[in-house]
Length: 177
Image 1 (cartoon, rainbow, N blue to C red):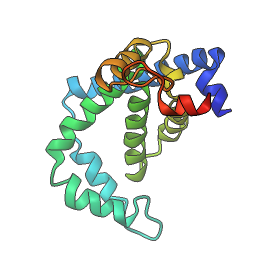
Image 2: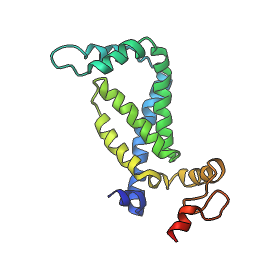
Image 3: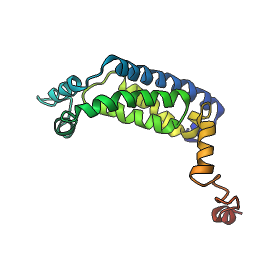
Image 4: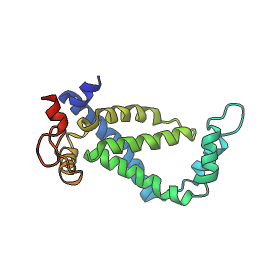
């Protein structure tokens, strides 16, 4: 299954549809917050209120994070959440840094789940897992097709796994031969 997700052309097309759909969900949520005056304080206070009782929806460790870091720094979250949602959506729609965008989407979805909000978060996490596992195949029909090879060759200083940085076969390729 893992190899199929990473190499198959049918999987590539299915992942593209999934990626664009999830990206649309993220970008519309982020755009609404960017243009609509987002304030996370109500959400954070509501999450903290769910930390009490016999069956708390928010567990004590996360409640401590909310009480001692998130709520005192709500201004930071008022900026990070909308920009993060918009950036994740843009990355997924354009297929740029697709794996990283899906991973950051998962981080936000888990944060919302930890805060007691179920909504569509579990479905998005499940879909994002497929995108992360598929790695570059999820972004082949997108800008990752050109961005990642360019970065590998010019920024990270490597061409591919079979060649060294100077274009000569590396030791692993020699040992395999």
